Image (cartoon, rainbow, N blue to C red; front, side):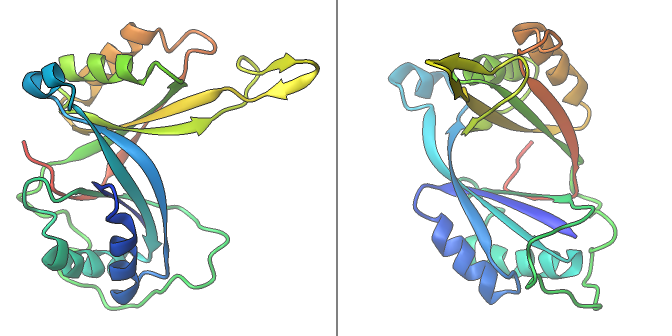
Length: 217
């Protein structure tokens, strides 16, 4: 199974999901996000933060890869500023009875294309307001920006009470795509910047990325 994540400009998520259904996915989930652009000029004029939508799709690997090739012809993800697509592996999936699968394997399904760089997905969960620290540290270590998603968290170090009521603090999820040879430097920079090894300061995990569109070195 393959998890497909597609980051597009605000308002395009529904169009992507409709296209995905036509090409073999059973459905998708859209979340609101914020993209960060690594540009001094845009930072200066206050336009570095851009509203995004993050679309999650899941399918058997051959179905997902074939569908992405067809969707890429429609959305041209491999051209600048058309979106970012990446996929990771799923070990198991529950709650979806309609995920389509087929035995036919399309070209390049098994082996990563030779001209495609190897990437990792770095995911960092921190308290609200600290995502920019993560992005700044990552950019200084070689990252090219990231995507921020709002969330809520509850853990032994984060929970609090007001008038005997449990409060689940707001969180931010930072997603950074990094070339594999820069991943360790980025992780180290984030760790030093926010002291992530100290209790309550956040969680960081890394996943292998199987396929990408819209990433430029």
